[in-house]
Length: 279
Length: 303
Image 1 (tube, rainbow over the protein chains, first blue to last red):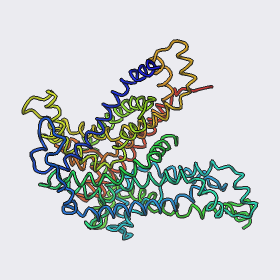
Image 2 (image 1 turned 135 degrees about the vertical axis):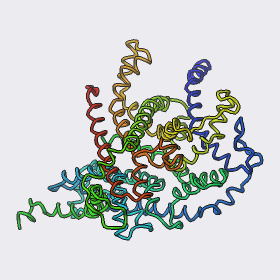
Image 3 (image 1 turned 90 degrees about the vertical axis):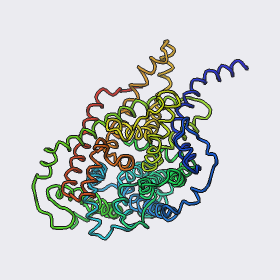
Image 4 (image 1 turned 180 degrees about the vertical axis):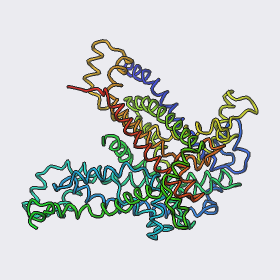
């Protein structure tokens, strides 16, 4: 018995070794920035060999986190924008997905391909014209301008459409016999049944909007409206800003999404897969 | 009237409900996606600079782009970067997926750790690496400690025009490879074990199994990886903005960054729109080429 277990462990050693190396490759940069965040003074930043353990360790950089940029304000901005985007997108895309997936009507295929076509549009091509449009609609320099363009996302529509379409017709028929119209069916029966897809779409959109940089950079002029990404980008370009401070700010900026990821892993992973298998 | 609104008409009860359901999405898509793309076309034929009335200039913007050697340089930079990133991701992600697939204790935790860079924003990842790439930063210090760099020697990752683009590519690859590995993993897990077992019974080695079964069956997933990665790589922006700003000596000036710079730093909005349209066309071409070329010869499994 012991020989068997030993054999298994020894057989797994090369795998574990590889896994260790790969883990190190992904973790070391994070560990380095974490360690830098706790350092005071310049002596430990550029040594050979690199020193990962700060001596002395200080919380000073974290205490001053609000001094180089309005950190909590930016966190609120980012969270607000992300949550509202998710809510709006689901509210707009779910009914559309339901219609495309469960209602037979003339022009359905055409609409399907129309939404598909919008997926082909790379954002950079419309960056300028979208900005000009938002300026005309008074959507620059406010949160609405950051949120509204993402109200419709073809990927979300297709993800949800697939889920809606896979619900067996009997459920719908039974509801119809009870006299329900499409809206009741959608709201009371279909939506609860596609919760996993809604969650996946919500996570993907939330992450996307939280991490977005180019559009908030372009749309938001007032510094107090900036998102975390724009703020971190601004301070990382500042002359004379200490790397310790930048690191502490970056670490704090990374935390929310990292925690969300570790808790809700499977939605992230399933989101990645549905992106691939959509075909 | 009945033709339209009757039971089988285009606007029958079912259809009306459907259109109502789709209305917000249609309005949103029309305003924020379809109108801008049409307007981008229009703008690309003007000399709009953000404040005065634009004049129609026909193909002038496109002509000035394609006769400018710097634009060809930008295209070359973008292509080089895309090719390197896609190649590296396609290959590395495959091996990472093989590792993900190993049935060992702690594989969930392993996958989660590897995936963390994927959920971290480009801005934060780039900021992190900007410090690591510092001339006196972690990477050089590690290399010096390992004896690869002599004392006083250092590699100017982000300051050497010959190296900067590869440094940026390295960061992109580091961040995204696990995403593609998950896609490959889905493919690996879809391979019927009977096939592998049958091959082993016939005496196939691990290498032969990989070469003759795994790789052909992974092909559809590989296509997805290549297409998605190519499109994403062509749109690189954040890393360049944070780490190099297009330099040094324009060696990291990629097309998307050019669009931003021309449009928002120099306000050549007509020109920037034209560059954006060029990017759109290239992305479409890449998708079409990739899909048609790679789809040929995908293994058909008849089980």
